[in-house]
Image (spheres, rainbow, N blue to C red):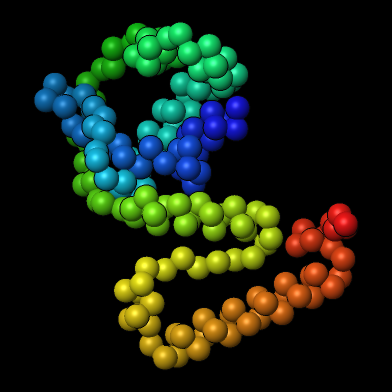
Length: 176
């Protein structure tokens, strides 16, 4: 059920698929969603498809989990069943011209996985991690590298102090 709960969460692996969607103008004045092969940067259109995902799944996560466990429905039939109310309505043409956001290639799957792991570690330990590309690290000035090293040293001292206090980073008693 955790997988389905996070299906519309952009910062989780389960919601990563949303980053591949691009909202485009259709010739009839409506909009359509195109599945791109690369992950894109998440901007306004990404948040729009996330909201659509949340609307379709709203309160129906357990129904989806049950349907997936049964495994009898084909993916298209399953999509139609869960989108029945929303998909039944024919969307009207847009009243105002929309400004299309260009699809900009974003982080690759490896970088997204590191960002997701960073968020998971933050939740578990309270430690803040920076994720950087190798070329970004190589282009850092000496002052930036020294600042980064000082931040890392400070974080290490804070972690040791927390360990010695007998409490976790949220201030709760540690379980032994």
